[in-house]
Image (cartoon, rainbow, N blue to C red; front, side, top):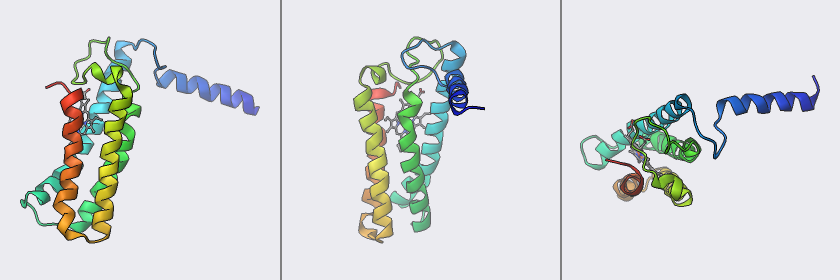
Length: 155
Ligand code: HEC
């Protein structure tokens, strides 16, 4: 098969799975988009949970867990923007994303980038065994959740 034909076929395959920016989503596509992004945040929650417990003194400090989960939070944070390309404002699927996300996408993406930055900083803190800043570093990650939820997540 020629290279051009392969590329054309690949492009056609992508078009079937990824909604085109600006196009109306079918209810099925919107349902998947909401499921994906909510799943992403469930993983975010499960990775910060143990760190929050450590910061509050409810669990012993475990540097290996901080390092591993901070890396995961960085990677999950990098996915947020991609999972919000699909604009579900005009669909009926129940979800907690505010319409403001698609009105201020640059700011929303910036808030996602702040989660990435704080997670990277936490990895540096733990790699340096900067124990005095463990709680602060975990708190800084948590602050990025609230900053985005305040503006872009419905209660
Ligand atoms: C850039 C914005 C942004 C950041 C950063 C962010 N969130 Fe969210 N979060 C959202 C939005 C928007 C929703 C609503 C998703 C929906 O229902 O469509 C959400 C939903 C959630 C949910 C509910 C998922 C569900 O199934 O309804 C949890 C839990 C959550 N976030 C946890 C966190 C935690 C913990 C952090 C930080 C470590 C975080 N989020 C960082 C925007 C963000």
